[in-house]
Image 1 (tube, helix red, strand yellow):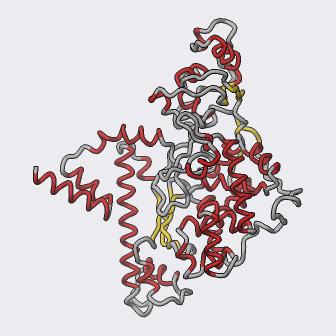
Image 2 (cartoon, rainbow, N blue to C red):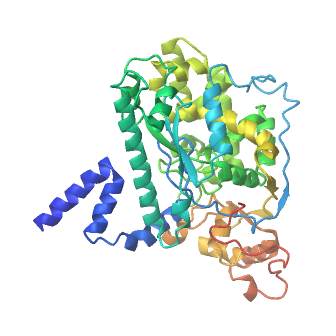
Image 3 (cartoon, rainbow, N blue to C red):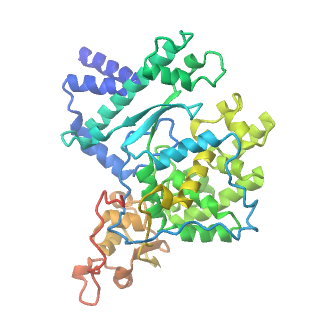
Length: 488
């Protein structure tokens, strides 16, 4: 027993330093890690991944967005039209141009969103985004069908760890040399990347923990996000126009969730706009059965209010947008502390930039990158289409129902029910929590009559058992939604 305890302690300490070491040791000592895979996959599916582009170190893979082309057909993509916004709050035609000094940041994120796919990535310096040490390619790992999901991810993590270590060792070596003489190709490449940086101990500083970061590519994710935006974008623009706000702001959803309506983050942010529970609490948007942070239009109305509040506090859109990530009060305090309202000075000044995390420093640059890419999507991508809106009807239910009752209107398809009703807490089906009366429920149009009759009778059965007056799925509607369907 004593030896097992010591082994366990050693594994925990190893995981903290380098997770891949712990995984290898556990396999060596006979722990069958794949036995936990089903539980791990269940957790991932229960909490649909919101892999933020701006995480301190992005994960090495992203799951498919639920609700692909089999749920809705495609339609022609419409490039955004921003004219006629003269009366929008704080607006002028040059408000969202790239500010001088932020060109390298925006160029980096433009490349992430338009060049590298989710099978690829880069290792880069977190302080100087024009320093990209090397490209990373996971294609060989991803095509190996003999590897389980978890084992594949462990090998990818080990590969990235090894490459980070290699770069770190090179930086420490360069810290001790005085010229290019005797350097190999990679060492010489890195040496020249730093030639324009006149900071003391620049190589040693760049080798410190947290400075070498992995960024997963987003090209296919961005193209998929443009497809899914077709379901919601026009309604979102209408809400922002009615609120008197620039409709460019709606493009923050590309950064926050890639228009994944089931996006949930590990820190508690939720929905297309990734709103935190504490932010929504004053608006009474969250209950045991219903979470309106996940309702596309309810969340958009709240996001519009938050953005308006941010601007009224900060009187500047770059600052207000950064405040959506960092918190508006925090941004205001930084402007007062460092006596500047210029976003570039705040995020790049040696002193003030340390008050921001990596995400907050890059949030506005990321927004500008997706703004440009979506506007010129036909230039960046070979085939760009929008999804048609979801074919749904909304009903304010007159009585409380269970999640199991709701599923009868979706032929038992749990994932389809979630895509139509992301605001309904699916855990209510496990905990027998009723969806209260007066809740808005979205149902497929071809199940509208069935739902009305079910609610009137108080009995819930599947369409095939309902009788001849209830229409089944249209033969032209395409196959039922399957887990993992994607527009890619």
